[in-house]
Amino acid sequence: MLSGLKGFIFDLDGTIYIDNKLFDGAAELIEKLRTSGKKVLFLSNKPISTRENYAIKLNKLGIKTSIDEVINSSYVLAAYLKRNFPDAKIFPIAEQPMIDELISNGFSIVDDPQQVDIVAIAMDRDFDYRKLNIAYQSAIRGAKLIATNPDKTLIT
Image (cartoon, rainbow, N blue to C red; front, side):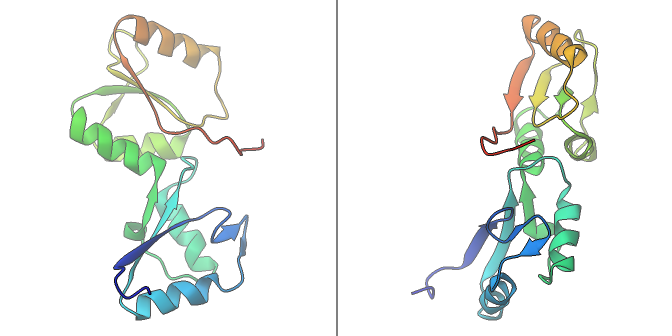
């Protein structure tokens, strides 16, 4: 049944693990797929950790993983912006891992509404009025608003 499939993408939190507990059989399944020649990737919608940290966590939990096998919403956002707005100056409403991803992809991070081309919005547990005001001032002068994704199951 799986012979025609070349690869698999697994969501991380709630599928492979919860918190720091690997689901029973997850490591064995991943290893079996890999030894069968299948490509395995891991996906997270959470922009509050880096791809490197996800890979480190998976390795600690017993699933050998490289950073190139992890995709998160920050990585997808940076790739989208790089392809569509490569010279954009960005004001992120986000936490440091997403900001770091944007910087590592060559984007300038600014907080002057007169310079902002794109307001990149993601999870930000330090969201405040200052950030809201910069985003608003940027938007009314024409900056694009681009959000990663909502997480409707997040409990803070």
